[in-house]
Structures are given as structure tokens and as C-alpha cells.
Length: 525
RNA sequence: GCCCCGUUCGUCUAGGGGUCUAGGACGGCGCCCUUUCACGGCGUUAACACGGGUUCAAAUCCCGUACGGGGUACCA
Image (cartoon, rainbow, N blue to C red):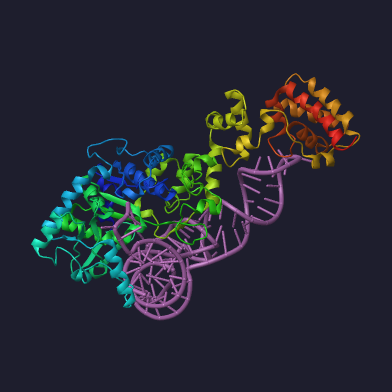
């Protein structure tokens, strides 16, 4: 057995792999879409292949301006830019389906000519009627198929003259796939194995709509073939229509070069009730889009991972593990490591719930591991939004002190106002507990002691304070909390000595003096 | 309804007939570190949906049931 394995190594397509990510620009790109793009990217990189971006804008009614830019910006942010396609260029341009209309028209006609497709003149209204009549008769399973099409107005039933006449008269029509009778369509899904459908279950899908645009089914087959796509990696919601797609490859005579299919498990809501949808973000208080999206109505506007304060590397790592696992115990993977470790065979079959706690954990891990200067650069805009004016070096120092206790980028500036300006509010409850009538002279003596220190670095400061406590017979619990309250106003935050070093001697002493007076007032002295 | 896909700790998962008294991570809980909040360290909690087969042996293979999800548009 072992000797045959070499034939099945993942690199058998080395150099020839071509995959595509084909979103439709109907709004912001959902996080599930980002994961699909990521898996396509990883598969391409792993195998030295090409990652193509194609825009599937065949539904004119659902087109949303700005969506295409949003898609590109999202992929860019995640660091998984396509190597060919819309917005990038390449040998198979145009990559926007609305600009390839003539190609689909021509291919649809080819199918009509070879008997694989036919004209249908029924209006949507007529179909609605047919559907409700069938339902009234107890058939809730109406579909436009081999049985029902016999009663429809199609080029299969009408005379050639009649069809020509209707066409010439400019009557609206669609072109439908003529699903063959009594066959079993089988294909091998790289994730799920063999999947088959009986043609009696498949309806005669519309290929060309009456507005002259192709449906997804036609456009995706034609483009994947023309663009020489070798592997189709897409969401599980496409699995049921793959039977039609195989039929189309067959009808065109392209079966020999049909791509390999892989249907990814869906990303489910945190409560497991259905697939994650755009509204679930607001519902569960978490982002479900990579970047924020502003729409006309508030209901269609969403906050993104980026704006929540997530690092793209963390989002990518988190997403990669939602439905895939390398089989080792390593959890943290850079994009490069993911490219190296990725394989389709390791993608799981069942849907994965969106685990926001895990997403936060990943972010924390990346935040902690990031360099201070790198973080400072990313925090800069957030600091400026709060009108904090500090040098790069100072900001990096703040990051150094805060990153260990932050989950989001924004936490670094949200919980450290006292490092950028004066203390705004004091934790009076804790002050009342720690500030005694006899405290003031003690702490004033400590301030004088600190003032006299030659070095204001954390290490020497600790020595100095400890020396002071030993001399006065004070316990750390009597001194440190008050010091912290004086410097930060709160009981939370970085180490006291580190804070003093950052603030510097002058500001630190100043704060102590201000605080002592404040504390007296607080406890009513 | 019909068709398709799925089902291991609360969650993400490892596992591809014996090495499983089922491993890791998140979360929860506890302890240590620290007289701040965290980080970190250590420990703990908790799962093979059910029923039949096949086999000397099944979480792993087959069938059925239940449950979950997806699809069922001139949307993608």
C-alpha cells in the first residue's frame, strides 16, 4: 500500500493549480466569505498555484456600489491578495462577469444548438401560477423539470416557426438546461468523497435570464473553464447545485478538464441555530465582517474586526482553524506557516460554530507577541482620535506596559488615559479604604525620598521604596496601593515602578502631591 | 414535503480497526506567582447521538433511527 502513496501527494498539481474566489458584490464581504478566500489562498500558495479573484455581479438588482472595493480592501487587510483577477489584472480579463455577457450568451446558444438547453417563454407570473396550482393539487414539490416542461411554453414543445416568431417579436425568454432523463450524476468532493444525485431530482435550471444576464450556474461553469480553474473551493451551500454543474461540464464537452470540487463546512451561529449571518453580529455583540461597512440604513451597517481592534494575523489564524486543523498541537500559525501546513484533506466536514471567545484569545496572543514599536504604529490613529499627543517612543512604552493586559488594540489606549494625561478620576472607594489620617506625613516623606533618587528607573525605584518601607516599618500593602492610586487613580494597570519610570520623576512626584490633597478631601480630612 | 451533507468534552478539534483508562486548545473552576489588574505556571472539569450489524477486536467500516445543517428563485 505504502508504495502507491507517492501518487497521491498533495503536490501532484504543483505549478498548475488555479483556484478562484468569486464573491458577488451585494454588500460587505461576510467573514465566511473571507474564510473561503483564505482557504483558496492557502491552497494556491501551498501548491505554487494562482489565486484568481472574479466578481460575480450577474444580478443587477442586487449590485451594491462600493462592495467590490470592500472585497479588495478586506483581502488586502488580511494579507491574502489574489495574484490575478479583478482589480489586479491577468490573462483572462475581464474578471467582472457583467463585462463578459457576450461570452455567456454565445455559450448558452451553443447548448441550445447541441440540444442540452432550450428556450422557455413562461413568465415569472405564469410560473407562480403553475406553482400554486400544483400546491393546491397537493404537490408541494413543483419544479421545472422533465415532467412539467412538457406542459410549458418551450422550444421543445413549440414548433420551430413558433419559436422563431416569438424570438423575432422580442418576446421575453430564458434559456434552461435540459436535464437528461433517468441518470445518476456522480462526482468526487475532495472533502466529502463521492456525492451523487439522480437527474429526476434536478430541475431545469435557468442558464440565461430574460435580461440577457447569465445565472450563477452558467457563468461559473463557463468562467471556471475559460479561466482554467483546477479546483473549486466554495461553501457547502453550493453542494446541492453541483449536480447541475457537472451536467453543464458534460453538455459543453468539458468533463475531462472539470475542476475538482471541495465544499467547505458552513460557519454556524454561536448558538448553533443555522449559518452565521450578517445580522448575528449585532445579536451576539461581535463582529462578523472583516471591516466596518456603512450603509444608508443603520440596520445594514456593520462594525468590522479591524475596527473592534483585532489584528489581521489573529483573524486569519482564527479563521483558518474554524473548520481546518493541521493535526498537530500547534495553535499559533503565521500566514506563512499556514501556507506550508494547509491541505484540503484536513478540512472537517461538519459545520463550525463561530467561537468568539477563541477569536479574542487569538487576538490576545498576537497582541502579546507583537513588538512595541509595531503596536505603537497601529495604535497611533487610536491615540490621535483621543487627542493624545506623545512621541513614538513614549507610545511604544505605553504599548509595552499595556499589551500584556489587553485583548484588543483599542484596550491599549482605552484603559490608560492616565499615561497620556493627568488622572481624570480616582477610585474613591479604594481610597477611603487605604488613606488614613496618619497617612499624609508618611507619604510626604516617601515623596521626598523619591525626589532624592539619582535614578528613576524601575529597578532602582523598587529598591528605594523597599528601603523606605523597611526603615519605617511599613508593609507593602500599606504603601503600594496608595502609590498606585496616586499615579493612576485606579487599582488596575501596569506595575507601579514601571509607571513611575515612564512618567518620569517630575510628573510622578507632581501626581503624588496632587493626589495626597485629593485623598484628604475624599475621606473628609 | 423532497433532495443533499453532517453528528467525539459547553465550543473548535486530534483520532483514519487494536498504542483510547479518547489527546490538545478556548471557556469554566481551583491553586501558585503578584499585597493592583492582567500575563504566566500548575491542576481540574467535560465527549465518541442511539440501535443493529461486520470483526478475535470499532470512536474508527456498513445499515437504520434520531437530531442538526444546507438546498429547493429568471439570488449568489
